[in-house]
Amino acid sequence: LLLAGLVLYLGSMSLEYFLPPERLRALIIEHGRRSLGMDVRLRELSIGWFSGIALRDLTIGSQDKPFARVENLTLGLSWPALLERRLVVDGVRVSGIEIRLLRDEDGKLILPGKTKKTPPPRHPPGGGPAPFELAVGLAQVFGGRLLIEGSRGDTWDFKVEDVAARELRLD
Image 1: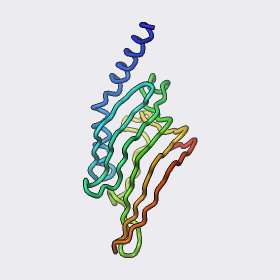
Image 2: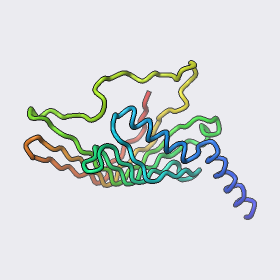
Image 3: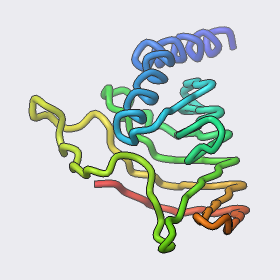
Image 4: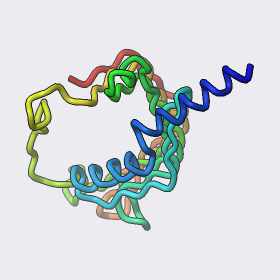
């Protein structure tokens, strides 16, 4: 029993060696700011072999009327990929998400972020495969809300209780 506890402790320390939480938190915030063109705030991030990557209180956009706010976001990780020093997300669980979209006077949605669209490179500089791939076996959303606010003060408010999708892949 003591040996099993020691193995689990050393395993969690090795995971934090390969994915230091403070480094990953900084990467998420910086990448979010650059790709979305909005402020990104993240109160807490934790990493564990069994729990994966857990984000708490993620806010994208202005403090008073953010584009998105997420209470809890957990990314399940693939152990074999981690042992190969690759980050593979195989499950996503979101709870307490709120997304706010605006409509202009013509009723068209005003999407946040940068207006110039440049596709991301398929491989990082240097030509090797990307260190991140997204193949989600199960994605779940619990307790979501979508607000669409019009320019004339009209608001559409959609609530989502539970949604799940299986076998998603981003190529």
